[in-house]
Each structure stands twice: as C-alpha cells, then as structure tokens.
Length: 68
Image (cartoon, rainbow, N blue to C red; front, side, top):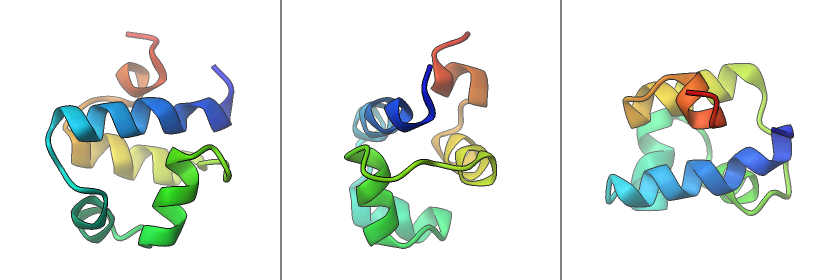
C-alpha cells in the first residue's frame, strides 16, 4: 500500500475507536495540522509517525497497513 494511502486507514481506525482527531493528535504528540494532512492524504506519514499512530491505536503497523 502506498504511504499516502494510509491516511484513510488511520482515520478509519481512529473513528472506530471513537477518538476525536484533536484528542488523538494530543495523545500521539503529532500536531493536529499534520495529523489532518496525513488523514486527508496531503502529507506522507513516515515510519516513526506510523509506529506512534499504530501504538496509540493499540494495533500493530501491519494491521494499520492492511497486511495482517
């Protein structure tokens, strides 16, 4: 899966967990503006951010990538 397509999955998992975007940004330490861009596929997510996001969603990176 292309890096910029992960935004849709991140948003879906976040919504599934019923976490608001601002709350999730605070929880992950990723600025809200950056998280919004990632979810809208306007910015690529790097491996470090991907790991932080997956950890805070309580899933593994493979599941987030759709590989599990």
